[in-house]
Image (cartoon, rainbow, N blue to C red; front, side, top):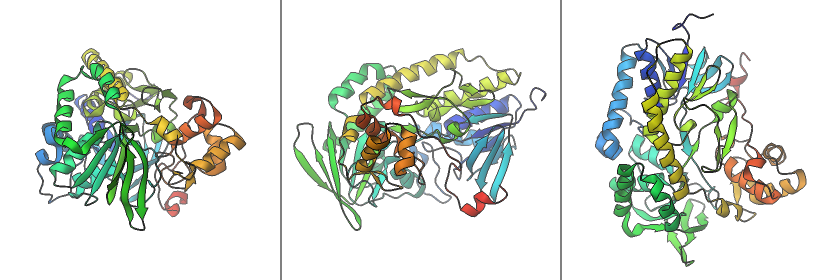
Length: 455
């Protein structure tokens, strides 16, 4: 049996959750391994630009600049002191029991661990509309990455569409950077947003900040819209066709479209690690099952947006809680978690109210025409998916085997939720009853020569 404190702990992800988890372990005398896809720690929300970048933290992160700099400083200090074994620009490809394999700048590398903390964050949640597969159509997260990491806007006349706080945030950041935005189209109605407001007032300062951002968008912002299609030519988007809350038709000229409906938990590695999932009706997605501290199974812990979509502050709390649970399970002294759990409960109430205010557009997805591409990697259309359900039944992995939905580079990250809506609608069942697509290693694309060598 491994002596207390001598167990090897691996953290995957160096965003707010991963950084705080590492910090708590280091404070207890544990030296964790940290594997992260970023060039530097910070995650998506606090992504750092390359050397020589001239924009200040205040320009990059706005009101979150102080938090971003603090997290960066904490992590850099631990790395410089050798208190963590840090592997940047490294993607975990597979997990099996106590074994991880990652693609690093030096090639494939194997890791072993006694305990594993997954803090893999979240990604854009996208819904298909006709034309969204064209070049020049991006996720809101991609637009934000380009702005933060390279200081560029991805178009000269931009339309942003979707729903959720990321829509407002990215629009504000682009406008502040001098980008030209033609329209900001929110599929959530003012009525939905008002219904979620009382619950969101558990964090009044955050609500006020969002309202102030919204006010700066002015007449560019439209709520309660219906997205019809993206008009394209060989170069990409030329216009977005939409209807306003009163049903009036509009066409907004553009050369770039950014889409996003809040966030989707990045759970690929959690699935490979053997987590159990439940369909969350509030968030309209499958989320891993854990206890309040983030324990998913023996030696496996989840933290941050990979577990609950609570934002950066909630991710920091979840990271500390997961590390606290890890320390307790290792037989080491761990801080009292009562206060953090209480705050986490408040963040969860806020997040569920926000999900009510900015819902996933299931009705819009179920109504897409048959020729709409649903799986962009494999070119699977809504009509092909519907036909496969009629032929083979309403189970997601059965549909996958028939039409290859979710078999491409993204492994269903972008199409699984929309596909489940269409499967459920065609089979006249609940979305949860359609099931979720099984994960398949490698979790990230890589040259096949690297994958088959030595296996």
